[in-house]
Image 1 (cartoon, rainbow, N blue to C red):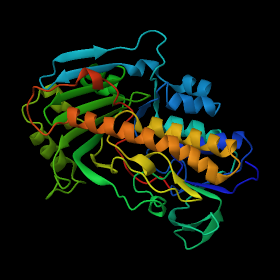
Image 2: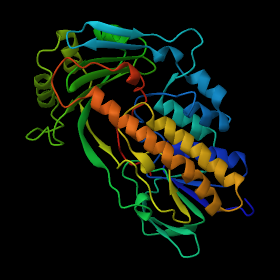
Image 3: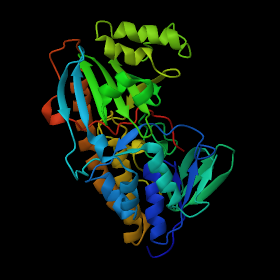
Image 4: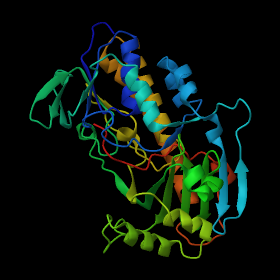
Length: 389
């Protein structure tokens, strides 16, 4: 870069933070604007499997791979699959030394990235309202408090409901027809031994037709469950989602006829349920290049949970930073970055659509199980499309 650009990243998720880290490694200043008031203001979600050809590439570029390995759980690559009668029909284990997709809690990964940045990089409690491209190739960032700032590059890393995206595209997320309802369990090995046996050291799924129950082991004895099913977005009509027992009864009705050990997952959670309808952007989602503005991660290519979302966000962030460092102008950097990112995102989004159709078909037949060519790459899914910036 011939001159030092003014760069703003909207959203302190993994993609935005790894982008900031790589830029700072190369001496490029950057500011990250985040709507959260502090790093601990909300849960960061479940466990991620970081792939060796995407997410790990980004962490190597950020100089954080060894620190990641120290925090990761290679044993978490284990996967168990059951039918609705709780019969184990497949069990995959990670081999000794297998580091192809080690697990890490999303909160741990975010903390690792935050700690790697220069103090003051992230401006907490600074939600963004919109972005306006300017004639000279710069962009004006409008904050929700009415203030505005100009930058040479604004990066939308602010997730499904991005406030930056409208500067590039009129596309909005659409409901997939699939909802995931989340439940939590603590100290499972002592307090919930049945769940501990089902989930093992990694991830468990039980599937029948258009319904699936996932269990995902996180660190420190925590487990997250997701009851997934096809239905209208208002499947909970007439329910108060804060009424845990009413939601529980509705879910038990949806999974009627399943084995009692699986239904216990819906009976014994600690705390309430969290409704997470799944949304996607069009495939392919593209735009005419706009000087001074671009997107990464879910803001650019929101897709069904398929094990690739967080990994692509990390790779997007690292590659965007490398493009900025390696080109003479921001415009050249965006041409190079978007020329690679957009086709890659379209390919992965098509795969994610195929996986969603296979995992949750529009039928209640028990005949279709997980096809081998889609197995088992679905564990980094973050079902929470909440905005990040």
